[in-house]
Structures are given as structure tokens and as C-alpha cells.
Image (cartoon, rainbow over all chains, first blue to last red; front, side, top):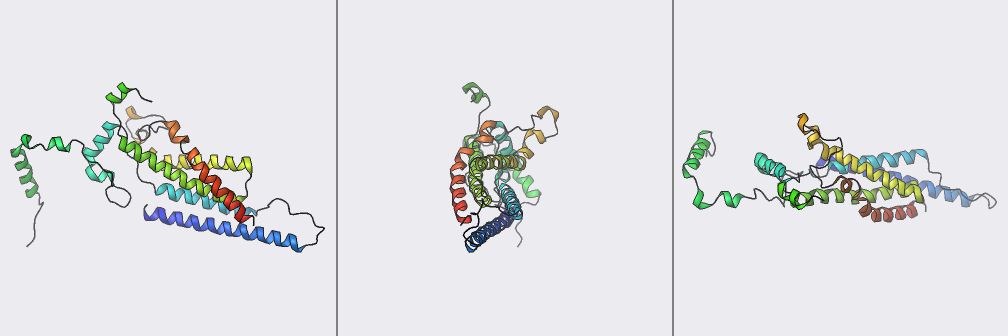
Length: 143
Length: 124
């Protein structure tokens, strides 16, 4: 869960708790008034919750839902060709969860063991790639 | 259910299916409990309580759709060749009916639990 979704959820939770407490106090007050008044008074009708508590409950609910939905992890494609394409294009970065770490059940390239078979290494291509990488400034160790 | 031939031509990734459905079910179970809290506070009775659950559960799924599923689905892409229907979930979910209604039964128990609990607590 990202921090913004957590904060939105917490705000909504606080609103919901406040609405709950208000409703409980309201009903306690109503029953107190009913017992304190004379015995000939009519029995308390069904709960007449004040409209602002009801509105606060609904708004709190919407805020909490929004915060929770924002905190869900991104979906992954289920068709194999879409998934494989995404894996090749974005590598690990396409499968980060919300804290920026790679998901624990990230499998990676499923054919990696095939692609790195020792008998099929193209050493000249790898030398060229390494030379290009060094030339581009990769791996410079400052003294 | 796709036939075996369709599965051989365009296979599915079970790991992704599991991840997607688990996320959605977790969300729906969690929000169902919260709906119960609200229903208890509002003092809803029989039919209106269940309608409340149904309406807000569908609202949650729709919001989840618009936040997580729609932005990356082919509908959002600009190439006309890939435009699918407005409510297409096929990129991330197996079947649209399971997407929209699958979590309802799961969350119903949690909803009723917190609903009765908070109804009793708030009504003193």
C-alpha cells in the first residue's frame, strides 16, 4: 500500500469511527430521554438517526473505499503473449509492487535456462556487448 | 471456459490469474466488513441492508475497474484496431461475470457479521 492510499484510508476510517461514536451517543441520549420522561409517553419510535450522521457515514465509506482501491497492487496481464512481451520490454521494473520492490512471486523469463545454455554461447557477441557497455560508462569504478 | 485448443493457441499465465483474483477477493472481503459497519451505524433493516451491500459492493468493483483495470486495457490505447468494449476485463481477468459478481458471496458473511455487531453496539 502506498503512503497516500494509507493516509486516505486512515482519514476515512477516522470519519467512520466518528460517525459510529456519534450514532451511539445519539441513541444513548434518545433512550435516556425516553426513560427519563414520564411513563405515559409513547415508546421510542424506530431510530431517527440525524441526517448529518448518515451523510458522514456515507462519505466516510466512500473515502475508505477509494483509499483501499488505490492501495491495491497493479494487475498483471493473463494472456501469455502479453505477459511475455511485458517481461521482455520492462524486465523486473514491470512487476514491482507498490513499495518499489519486486514481487516475491515474480518468476522472470521462463526460458532463461534455455537461453543461457553453455553450449550455445555466442562469445563474440557477448564481447561486443561488453565493450559497448564499458564504452558507455558502465562499471566505472572511481579510485 | 476456453477450449483446450484455444488454450494451446493463446495460453494463459496461471500466476497472473492467481495474483489478480487474490487482489480482488481481498479487497472485496475487506470492504464488505466496512460496509457492515456503515449498515449497522445507519440502522438498516432486512431488505434495505442487503440492497446496501449489493449496491456498494458493485460500486467498489466498478471503482476498482476504473482505477486498476481500465487504464491499461486495450480500450485506453489509441490504436483503433485494439479498441474493445467499454467494460472489457479480458486483459486481466478470465471472465467478466466472475469479475463483477465473484466476490459477493465471499464478502456476504463478513458483511452480516459486522452489520449485526455494529447494529447491536450502536443501538445500545
